[in-house]
Length: 114
Length: 115
Image: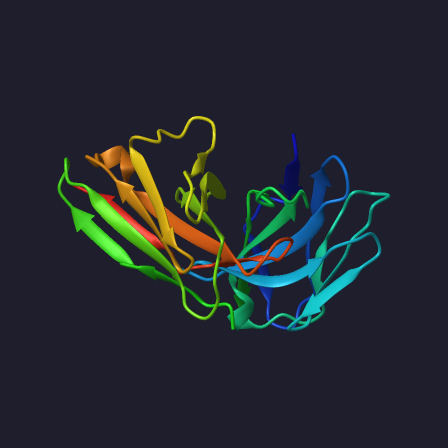
């Protein structure tokens, strides 16, 4: 079945540091890929997405490129802020009409210190 | 746009009580809603897919008689945890889609604590 693997946290950074969170996936067909962010005590917010190979999703300074050859969708941000402290989830959708279920990675907790 | 509201945000109740959680799409119609459960510091586990006007589709291992799902309208799905016990304590999150092949938009979750 489909699966998503992302690096375990917590990742602790200083403000303005470069952030990378690795994400790889296993899926049949051509899934859509997503990054979601969860702030403490809240639900998930869609951060960015990519629906086909070589697409780059970007939002709020975060970027991720859909790499079919390496089955990866790594999240990057060039200069993090304290407000970026959250849990980040990589996810894929099988793209099928029936439900488009999301399969999540285990989540990576990021802590940015001033 | 695409706001999903969950209510209540937190509930504490005694063992044996049934608890209902509502999930509403505020500014769009959602033919499909999803219910997830999240254990502390873990990822989301899909419990069921809720389709308006039909029975929910439950994931393997999820007791449908324990977790009753009703999707009576295009803007509301409810999850009822029947005869809740301490092991049912968890963070429950719903999501909804604006249409086929569209991203899921999540509610803020409901923290359920069973004493």
